[in-house]
Length: 451
Image (cartoon, rainbow, N blue to C red):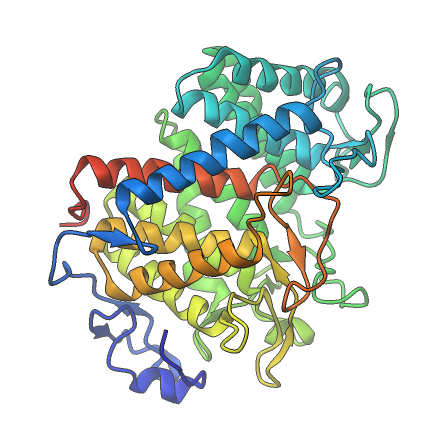
């Protein structure tokens, strides 16, 4: 990608945002909020990632089925008690702990249920999902937490001991997993259970005294009563839209619409065109450090989910707005010296960053750019995908390791060695493999979903 100035004035002066032409909405300061999506000059995508679409699809297939799944089976899945033990040294292949967490059980249940539903309905995959579901039902959600509390964060291997204060994400990931498992098992009861968990979380989230500390700004970041958190809307939205892809549900449809409104009309700051991670309960901007905090990792991840939702609804206006914001965040997050993307702009006006690198953010960029490319043929999306794919292959995808590197310092000269990433990584592989299958079947033609 070309060198781009990051100031609002320079951004407005650019002739294109997605390489497609601009559409101003007259927001404060003249911030350009959306860009039009028009078919590419060449409606056929021939190569991607320096490969044919079939070659790239095969690379994704190999990463999923020849590396991730076998190593999960050998090192992470608990074939005796059910569930996932993710504290694995990716180099030595030693398990460092038998602990299980509410987050990772819900995430793993979703991953294996989605695998089963979309890639051949392998009984062994369903067995792994069922083992996690049984662990969750028996040990995690057997007790109803007190109002304002959540299930514990961590469990021992057998589930007989629990520790650590949980939070809303554990509940929502379990709900997402149960909803996908309902489709895999054909048992309606798990869908109803998932829906009840989601709506209960929403009720708690809407309380003025809801407590959540956004400590990924800093450990001493101020506590805001009843915060509105972009990461919460993100997980609510993903859970809701996946349910709506399977069935109609007015309550879940209302939740999805509410999430999109909060994300696009409140968290997106019109002054500098980036998402604020945290707002006050009434959606006003805090008069503290959070007024200048943009967690770009969540923003990029959230915005491809909004684009997916626009695709589900065939809402061209939403797609144009979300795709423009996605591009804006990706361009701002780019490390133009060493490649890849930064996750956290701690202070927008002072331009203060966390400069570590996480795999999940790079993969969120790959999901969003491939979606844009599949449906619009956009040239910026293709170049960004190509560059990001090569960066990930060079820095994170190590075939000699059991799993891809999940996080490290800016140049990945030091990295997290103990972590089998079993949610963001396989989600990227699965979603993009499905997209590449569709693109190959169409002979590289763009989809025309928004025509």
